[in-house]
Length: 388
Image (tube, rainbow, N blue to C red; front, side, top):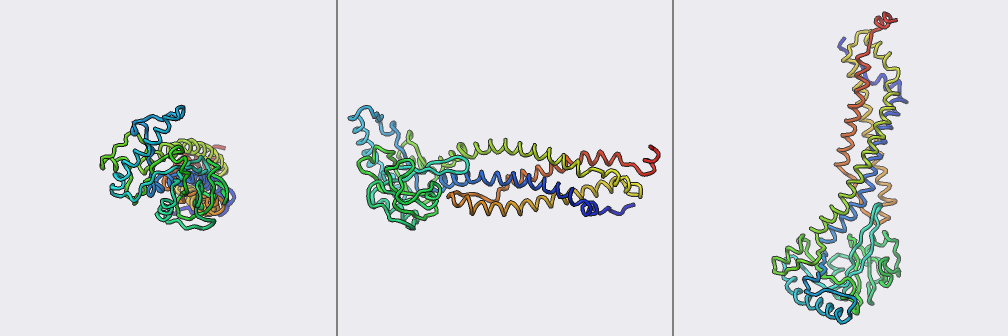
């Protein structure tokens, strides 16, 4: 007999067993994908800080060897020498830096910090504190619009972007979490994790002095750009796109990858055990059914392919259902949690999707073992009677 056995006979008459298998497979997809979705808030948010912010504003922390002086807080006179040399060094290289292609402005800035808390981990953002003219240039360059409050008018006042305000739960009049003496007086919207303010001129060179470099977005390696201009700062620290990408990989991507790999293995093991248990239930009492098919003339191959079609249908329904459920849950979490925390996320994660597909293929293959064992044990009714 060459006629095919419909895969829907069993599915139609055993909806509960099939549903349990579908739910088990779908839950694996949902658990795996949503876990990676939540972790993406860390990588995507910090990626924005390290690679998007630095397309606009980059920083240089002058090293002692480049200044040819070593700072010591223990000696006040030496501190004054350090201050004078920092200013002298900046004034010396200021005009040279401005001549580099792609550099719009160069400021000597006091830098304050605020923190961004992700669902996993946190990072710190530089807030350049400059004079009023420089601050207005920075805000204009960043395309910042004032939404609430006012612009800084006094020393140690700052404005922050809405995402920073949401993330830290700041309100107008609050002090920065890293320095309560710096007061938030306004809220801006610029699409970046950004803020700036007016420096306290009395401590500009004492508190995190940096060279703030405003670029047109074309500079990735600031140190190399300056080197081409003959400005050698081999012992200084650069905050630019190249170093941002390195830090993103070393501090975030690689760390998350290690954790997620362990988590994925744990989920796969648990789900594999669960699917095996469900599969045993799914295959329960099927042998009699297959023996009946064999008795009326269906071959083992025909019976086997009908089972494959049943399982394939189950896997496809589980996969498509999980995609729909994940899309809805991600949108809800994005609106109610992620956006409200001032974080970023990504919906489409091809690597995670591919890993899930590979696990599905593995589970599908794993389920063939008991099926094939039962297929080879099929007997016709006559053979069963003979054994009895």
